Length: 125
Image (cartoon, rainbow, N blue to C red; front, side, top):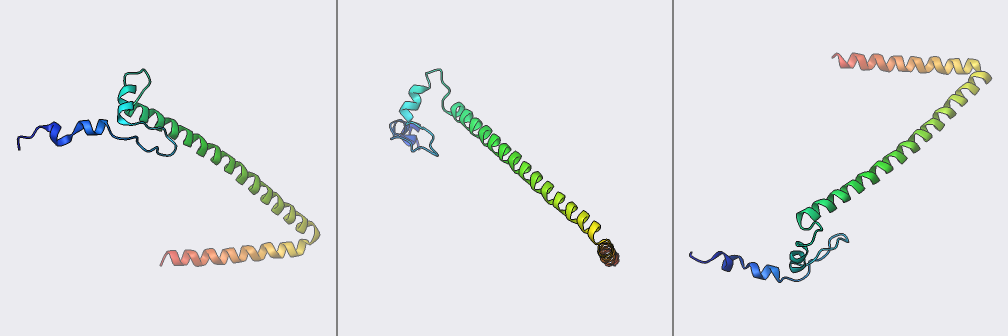
């Protein structure tokens, strides 16, 4: 019960431990080297970890932002090409076969009207 904290914790053993394995290519040092680097002007310990994690998260954010911008650009280009093609085909059909185009539009409007009426009647039951 009356043991000293040093004998329970054994702090000296932790200072003389071996090198720490790197995580994701990071460069970590053993306890002794970390203790020596604390006296230098470079940030170490929690400050170094905070700085490196901030840099990594900022880099990851920039990468995600660039990817989102490129994907948005690709989607807008593709949708523009698709809508242009649809309008071109509709205009061509309207000019070449006006009666069939009119019949198709009337049929489409009828089907949409029926679907809306069924949906409306089911939502109020």
